[in-house]
Length: 285
Picture 1 (spheres, one colour):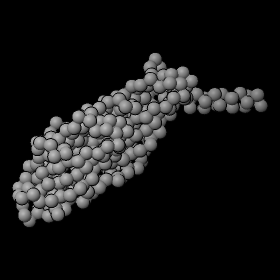
Picture 2 (picture 1 turned 90 degrees about the horizontal axis):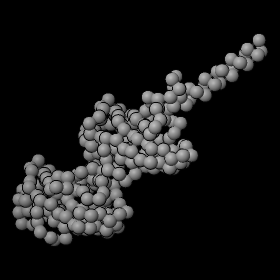
Picture 3 (picture 1 turned 30 degrees about the vertical axis):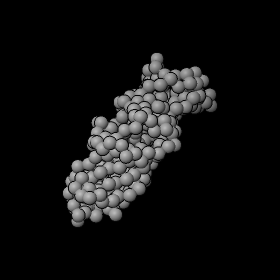
């Protein structure tokens, strides 16, 4: 009887061990190959950024694919259309692939545009499918629930950046005849030289302005007192450097006391976390 009990216990241990690493058909779970850890979940302008690390548990290199992220917030809203995915410094697509060295790690990013415009969501649930080249994995995605959503955005009387590594600052907002000139600076904290950095038309969105009385206005924009146009561009914004710009809001009513401007910003060699910079309720001096 003792021998039978020991045999049954041994079988149970084997089954438990298998169930940890494999499904009922003997296919391995992704957890045999990689660990995934969420490191950041934060609103940036109108987007939600989810950052994570992926670590190879194997001694040998693997070809990793991540795809089909599924996000649902705590209000029940799902986001299946406005997402994109990147590993390391690659471009954002609906899937991402990379070669991961033995015991090596890399970073990944999920971007969700137009996230919760009513600002009601405080957490999200995430699913992310994992693939390993030449391995038939069990159908088990990475899942994590109730990921807290951080919100460090400026909500009024300041600038809501389109990327946490780009620092915008209002220098002044003054009347210039019938117009209002909004003077600002932007500092490049990305750690790399930005090429063809620009704001306005063809860089994510032409500048649009409104006042505290709900009047709308046309705008023009320039860098360093260059020509006025629907966009401002510089060939190179060096890492750590700043550039000054001005947004001119046309024919602003005398009764207006605050100005809000939404304008696109982008660079050729850097993927910003969101398209729009928001200058929110800036007092007119």
